[in-house]
Image (cartoon, rainbow, N blue to C red; front, side):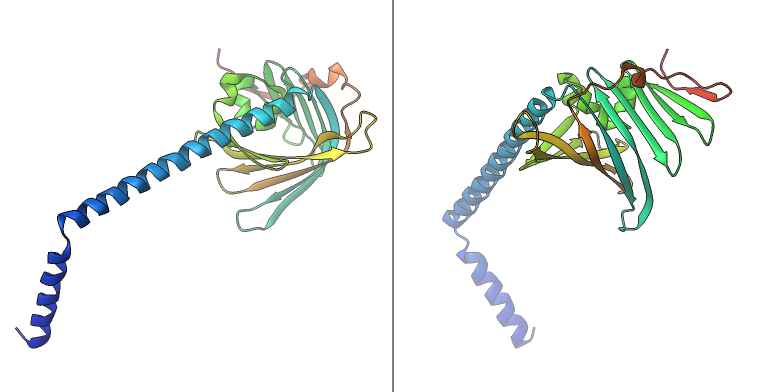
Amino acid sequence: MNRKSIVSTISAIALSLTITPSALAKTAALQKVQEVKQQSEQQVQQIDKQASKKVLMAKLATLNFFSANFSQEVISDSGELLDQSTGKLAISKPNLANWQTIEPNELSIVSDGSNVWFYDAWLEQVSVYSLSAAIAQTPILLLTSQDESLWQQYNVTQHKEIFVVTAKNTDSQVQSLTLVFESNEGSTKGNVEQLSQFTFLDATGQKSNIKLSHYDAKNAPEAALFNFVIPNGVQVDDQRVN
């Protein structure tokens, strides 16, 4: 064994001898403090999520209906613009929704309260799902629901007037829904908050950014908007569980 190796060995032995039972106890105590701190932080985060969910549900409880025009941009996980579209949206409680993409291709999504219909005019095909199954693909329907059991499937975080609704199920097709509210100072009711935009993030990392305009929460949408009539000659894909 050379001189350098001997010195290294002696240093290692000397270092090990300095780790007394008292030092070990302090190390264990520090680890315990760290564990308690982490548990406390997790509890605080959980409380924050619960509080944020209550705040969001309280906002949505006052939102009985609205209609608006929308513009949509679909962005890839690398930031590339994949698609742009425009259309109209109408929401009404309970569980009623009508989404009409007008440009560049006609696409309709209609919830009648029990079923959700997806109609692609170009493909001449209609797919129909039960409401509970469709929410996983179209979480904007959460805006129409105050169902506690349904909301238990999601976490909510808040930063000012931005709310991020995240699916607890990591296998969900839509991973999160971000809702942005802003004040409408021109309202006859005073300073009223309204939904101004929202974003879907899917499991592939693709984002759909939707901005609303001509927002109307004063006049209830026509009931006919939420009654889907199957066009003649189209193929129907029924995904409802009998």
